[in-house]
Image (cartoon, rainbow, N blue to C red; front, top):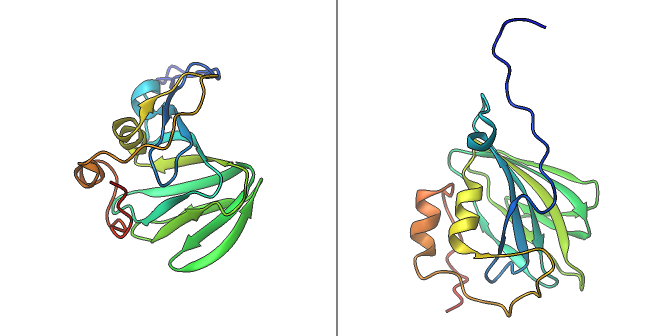
Length: 169
């Protein structure tokens, strides 16, 4: 071992990560598991999981300053990248570079779950600001709308362009 500064090492348990129910059109929930502030990382990132409810979707959008990795943990769905649809299932991994349009669709009757990693981070801030706090084991709430100021939240967190055609009020 050297005298150089060592980075943090942590284990995050299932019930330790902040979790939030998500509004329409994705519904489901997210877990904000790690970010560079929590672990004093040398690289700015955020990481978590997202569960998208059956027959729901994540709107098409871009990230102007962020790269994103999606790794499917459970279920199956569609990743639409720059208008082209790709089937994804447990074990599939998707890399999305800056300013690439992407959209995730769940056409099945079961939820799907993926791990997301964003560099630099900030997606966790977005999820917290649009969601409702969730405790493990509590019943899923009825679908609820996105905040009225969702466009402002998107602009100050990690989004470039977002599809404004879906507006559930």
